Length: 124
Image (cartoon, rainbow, N blue to C red):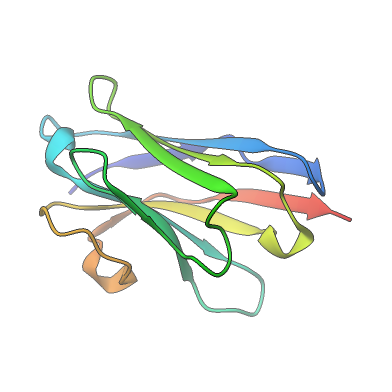
C-alpha cells in the first residue's frame, strides 16, 4: 500500500493559480502511475490527470486540458498539479492516487491507493 499526502489546496479567486503537491511513500515510486481526481459536492469523483513513470501525461480534455499540468519528481517521491486560470467549477476536493503498474488510466477503481484529499475553492 502506498501512503499519499496531498497539500497546497486553498481559496483562490477565479483566474488565479494553485499548485497541489502529493508526497508518496514507497521505494518503487518511480514505477507508479500517479493520478489526480476531484470530487465536487453532490457529484461523483472524476478524473483530472495522470502521469506514468516516464512522464507521459493524460488529462480530462473537456475540463482541464490547457489549464492544468501534472508533473512528478521521482527523486523526491512527489507528484504535482499546477492549476492555472482557475474557474469556480474547479471547486472540489482534489485527491492524489497511485496505481502500482505501468498502465496509465483514467479509471478511478484501477488506482489502489488514495490520499485524504485537499480542498480547492475558487471564488467568482
